[in-house]
Image 1 (cartoon, one colour):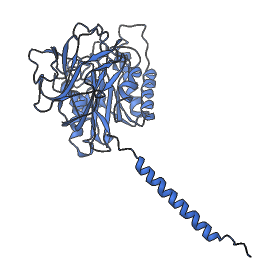
Image 2 (cartoon, rainbow, N blue to C red):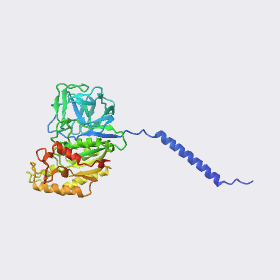
Image 3 (cartoon, helix red, strand yellow):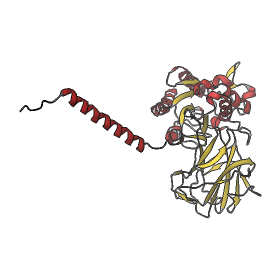
Image 4 (cartoon, rainbow, N blue to C red):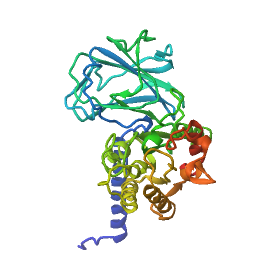
Length: 413
């Protein structure tokens, strides 16, 4: 009797059937285990945290703070970032709400929403930490003001975290008033306390945030109170005016008197870079405008040394760290300052050398020439008079507008 011979065609067909069945099983299993798409969060407002010079326990016992943030991009879901970055003990927040602002310390009817943290209404933020609230449904229009209210029970607060010189009025009242429609008799504050960010869920996959890191010129020094006339605000308004850029937000990480290479008022730019830039939600672009305070520090301090090469190296370091994170980086030229209290010819020579390097080095993905936008063409060491706030260092509101107008919006498309 003959032993049956294996048919190679039949064997191959069987193998193909097995492989096909296995592939179908794996695909079905993959479909069953696919995770739901996560929401695309982007920052729509931010500020840079700082530490005050004195303890703030005097002001923050059994009080409600209601703080106003002018958002850039809108959304239907929102979350808030609270901060105890510079605290040396935990910070207790017993209740928090968010609403649309109605101006002053009032909120718009029907918009008040309680905030929770892991489902709880009360939370302790450890020393040195930040905390994001749970998402909440709230229709936040672009370029609107939101009011974030939180209650601080009696506690000893050492090194409370804040942002000085907000150029925005915020409000403080005694007791728990987080849900109050108005805040009668509130004390006005012009800083943001324990609060440094608002995120929204983007409505488009290409949405992203611009972070602007800088000093008082980015922070908006001497801009009109409550008017949102920083150059970053004007930029946000321009971005909203074009369909191609309407999903690009602007986050202001300026600190007055900030320096790149040494401690000033607030941590130096290199030391705060990871926190204030790389940790922001949905960041796609970075604008760097820093260095004037390093240059100005030469005056009256004979032992202080700085060179253009040192500043250039530091700026290149920031650009490289951002690029490593997939962020496009735009270098901004340093604005004129002849006539300012800390002007010097040596400092001016460094400013001009650094600006030439920004324009020509190729370190950045693009250049924003703020210097050219605001200088007097007849005396390029100075601001054009209508763009000068009056101290020959900070722009007027018209100067901030001119800075924004100098930015090519195609950089963000």
